[in-house]
Image (cartoon, rainbow over all chains, first blue to last red; front, side):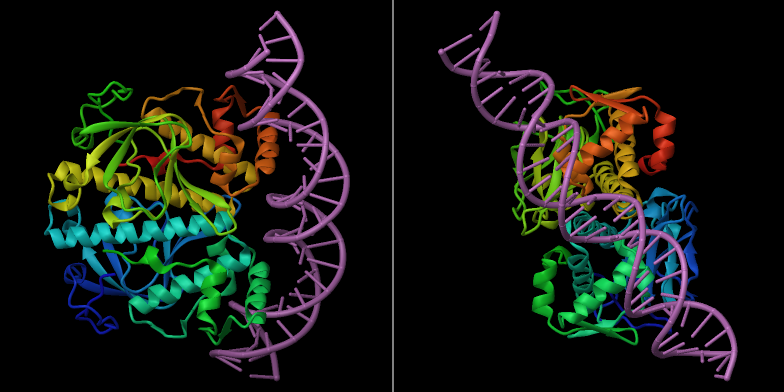
Length: 233
Length: 233
DNA sequence: CGTAAGGTTGAATTTGCTCAATCTCGGTGG
DNA sequence: CCACCGAGATTGAGCAAATTCAACCTTACG
């Protein structure tokens, strides 16, 4: 993923040299937990890249059931598709206090006429999230609850390591169990019990908002996790 | 979606004027039902656009459970992501006899340096399938079995109409119930019973490989189907 | 210290799954 | 023309997974 050093105050991301997308950032914007970056159905006025914090995309059914369709971590473009499409098919809300970089639409309106680096980065981002979605389809369709959660934790470990927000053996996971539920299509209660199972097998610990992976190989084996889908050219 | 008239024998697609992607087709290739276009893990040697027939992408778990992660209909790029990424994260197989257009890698290797029309079409295709995936995540996570199947049928009606392969009230649906199962993460048996429920409510009929939608508004209401996600700029 | 949000537990119920069998129908060979 | 065959569809009974509802516990925080 393209991570660079933002000029703003919240610059946690200092892994790669300045990246084309970050160079396009003209301003920062901060949201508190549970605030919406964009409502479902809205037309984006500006594009955002997440600089720090956790964010999610979600969609709602008439009966009120909600599905979190994506978790966004620092470095991710939050609303790229919405911008390119002209309207947001999902809502986007902050799971923690978040800082976003704003990118004026003009700079992306026709990404394919831009400098190739920027365009490549956008395409890259799209591919990245497409790969994550595909893996999530597999989890939702075929993995057991246990495997599904295991896979989620492995994926986040990997993604957060990439952006330098995780340690070797875990990371801060600022989600509630009901958010995990919305993410995985399970019930909060079922999430709770499945987590207990995971703990019972000494695979993870999850205390005070920090997830610790106690036996990473075992967890990855259980999840059938293969990080390849997160690695790109 | 970009559909045009292919010069080959199998040209069913004659809706829009010749499209940049179709212009890049150098050769056709035909597969019979159940033959693989590409194996999971393989490195694509050439890109493919589906000209006629039904194809799917799928992924397998160690226990042999398979998830169909996408249905591909005429006009769809089958392996765009695999090409851009350099390896296939899913297998792709023909659900019926299929004709594909082959596009040499050189023409796509760096799509962002190509004529903008081609590049735009590729990006477009990526967005299209991303939108479909997002909807499918919602179905898998939050819709009931009944809603899920209803949604699937609505989606296909819409997509096939777009490429001129559906009539007003239905279309040929050359899938087996177990393929529907792999697509929706259900059991074949559960698919069967859910289909009976759908028939019982006089929403659909499915005979001799043709799916008829008897009450489209009611089916769309049940599924909470909103075709907006399939419409693009 | 009280409150609220999040986490945990139990029991009853529903949904979907497994296994195992039977049915249907199009195609095949005799 | 007809009996056979096999893939796909259908059925039933029992079981497992996940949900619902309702309560209770824990912890952070004002």
